[in-house]
Length: 201
Length: 152
Ligand SMILES: [Cu+2]
Image 1 (cartoon, each protein chain N blue to C red):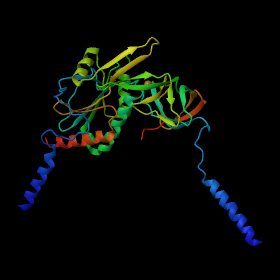
Image 2 (cartoon, rainbow over the protein chains, first blue to last red):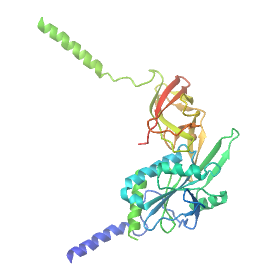
Image 3 (cartoon, rainbow over the protein chains, first blue to last red):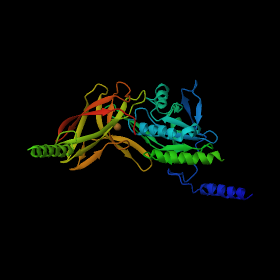
Image 4 (cartoon, rainbow over the protein chains, first blue to last red):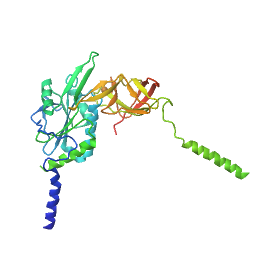
């Protein structure tokens, strides 16, 4: 009897810090609800016609979402490499984490280019290639992301894009936003916390 | 006599030992720019661009005014800086040059400044070595070997 009471008290202590919204994520928690679950993009390499991939994690799982492009020499490989390290650090829990990478460079990043690119970093990753600019733009607006592809006079393609990495929950809401440059240990720590909370839901 | 011989030997040994303790000069020209810790990431299939990172140090101060590949793995190397806005947007802009202050140190690193390689002939794999010529305004040209390796 006594040990039960002690256990209950311990359990309460464990649960308390995660109550009341004051969760200590190291990334940014959106101040308003960010629903993205109603949006989806075609997934390359998953069959024909390409099935739509909705922005929603599996039950009790997490979805990591990033917008980038294949010719990106610095930001995208840095982030995807961090994601790979984070999945490794999570160990068996990484099976509950899905990764999706959507290109903002529709003219150059065909499904044939995108699939092997993403697999280099995350073997089971979802390579997303919109069929039309408007389809991409709708998904980006939901995430609060933007991108711009321009061609210079010299014929070089210049791309700017939002460098945030998003954590989407199983309800289809953005739970955490990590700015580019967030330490991979911080991302891993946030994911551990998130997965622990999702496991109890 | 025997004793004197010993002390000469001892003195010689001491001198030799102390010489051995003099720190060896960092690699590179005595008056010039020290280029250290160069690296580039292995590239995913399909990527036609990559980035090279390193640290520059100069006692007198200098300016990195350009770079070009010496090997045949890439077409061109260009100095780029990342820019970010308050809303998380980011992109790159070309830099005409990169100044190193006297006794200063400039680090090229992911998310900051990089030497962008374009026109990759094939994917870069761990164990590859890129060879670049860096041109400095005062120190002149310097050849740098860049190992391709995973980031730590
Ligand atoms: Cu660049």
